[in-house]
Length: 345
Image 1 (cartoon, rainbow, N blue to C red):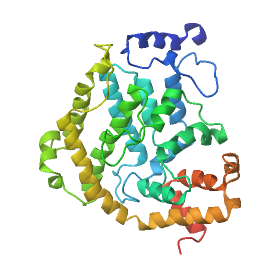
Image 2 (image 1 turned 30 degrees about the vertical axis):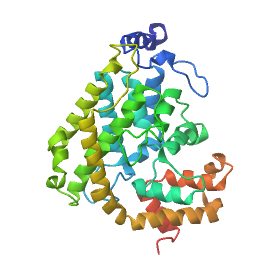
Image 3 (image 1 turned 135 degrees about the vertical axis):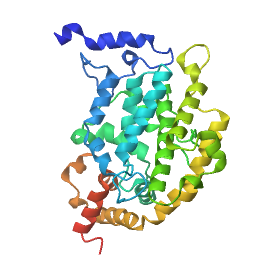
């Protein structure tokens, strides 16, 4: 009966009312390996579901965002960060009449390759691995290869492109030198990632006693607002206003996703404040985590036979197999593994 109804086709017909700049699911560039269409879900809905049901997604709940092994229950984890990014990105995409399903899939998958211990773990692997390490590239490797015992999730080109190109430089929330997503939905996810972490990292820093609300730069507060919700609301509303052309009111004009100058400057100033006052402190407190990653990397490169056997299938390069294993660890698993191997003495 469902195949006769073809619910997916009805959804695809509804997508024709989206912005002319939105990606319509039936016009996706497709998957690495062809699959028969689902009778119920569009290709982007199917991607979203595969990501949510993946092992890498589940592990995000035990991966650090900024503060390693915090004592409180309300600190952000990599999973709650991911959900906040998805919420903000969907709000913006809905307002701009873009494809929410594509936006959501990119947002939910963007950090699947993140290391344990947040950016500290990423920095150590980047320092040690001869090819260098970036979590966005590892996220793509997770969905293309590492999930499902080496089969990967076989996601669409548009979701993979958004995952690969979501990262930003330290200098600017709009920085494009690490790659620009090819779709507007991917661009929405990229800027939503920045909005989410800037605001929740402030909350965590206040919770940890590193800063207080009164420490935030006065000029930033005057532009963005005094509270967490005011700041997010200001940023989201500004992005929608700046990016209004994405709705397709003037199809001849290629739109971009961004912020107006005043809000962009305030957001970048707030981000710089976080790097100077919060992330520097968090990194100083992460010496143990940094040493754990280093020792695990050294141990498994010297004892490649100790890696789980399935990692032999993922690469012919021993060093790459070690990176895949460590990057997939949760904080607690990495600490426990280091202790079991006698590396913490």
